[in-house]
Image 1: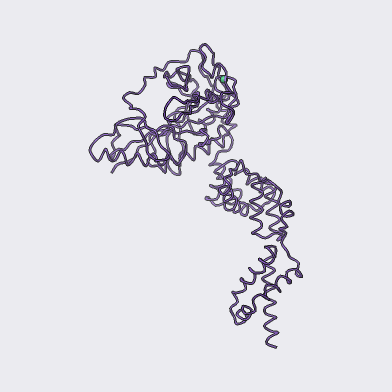
Image 2: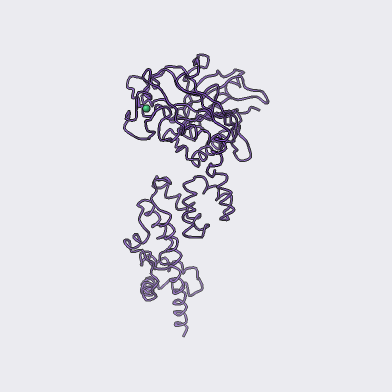
Length: 477
Ligand SMILES: [Zn+2]
């Protein structure tokens, strides 16, 4: 039996106000090369200065992952050449990281964390296959990164994705990063090897720069098959660094480990070491916000939600707070959750919205639920209104008014529609009266169609029952 041995290195882009060593803003989507200065452009002689906000975020993540915050840590230069790094070295932490040890639970298993360290991001390169048409965007250069390095405790692609999902939730709850993989705010390198029972593998394949859960999952599956083939032929896979092609879902060779760079690390002479007192660590610990596991527990205890529903709602801090804000105005937690986990999510997918881009406010969602309770709008129209609210952010009353969606409860109006429906199906009336009572739903459907969905179906059904009974007694007379 062979076992997968997987370790992850995750780069998390911090959403500090400024970059790690200069005053340039940290922003996503700005015109390229507009957020730059001599420091993050790597001019010779430009002096970096430390952003304390990034250190604080590192300590927060370290504490959330139960790590040991180091009272003394420092930066080093990692020397190598690449077009995204004009100064020829990256400022990072190597020998003395900010956080050592720690763990993150995935269900009942602990995945140990080796270290968390601070470093600067490089510029962003866009090129197609070669370096002839190269675009370099220095807006990204110098953005603070936290790198989380796990021990090789992960044993399947599912566990890898679960670890990343939980880590992403934690950074979102802490508010230290958007965690958006699609924007490169969370990037993952995966170290994959196969071991025969009990033996530690003597090689390591690293797949670099994965930017979706799917590519993490698929690259592990591909490597599992590729490495098995080597081992089946009694060959040892060669230690190397590989890339992953999203289209073919295959990994490909980037460079051999044997020719790995000697980075010649040495302490960064232009920056002071980081000193953190135990009091500072305690003060940050006391101010940590609620984390996903605590939120889930609270949702179960305070609102009586099942573990599955509490899990889904606590998956994001934004969703959790949307739920609680709605509940403060409409105190039926289960009804709110049912809408959120069904139609609300369906609409997010359907219109390619996110929790942040959808436009419905909790106060308007609560009004919609109250309107539905009053029976003045049908459940089907409720769903239609929800869609419009999420897309356009209008109040439910506005939508009901402009689309004439008020449910009709007036018996005179309902009877007029019922008459029209009955007149259309004389034969079916006799079928009903012969004892096939379930045909009534067909009549209700017809009335709803005639009324363009405005008739209150519950009232229509009860009036139809009376009418059809009356007709049969009329006949019997
Ligand atoms: Zn700068």
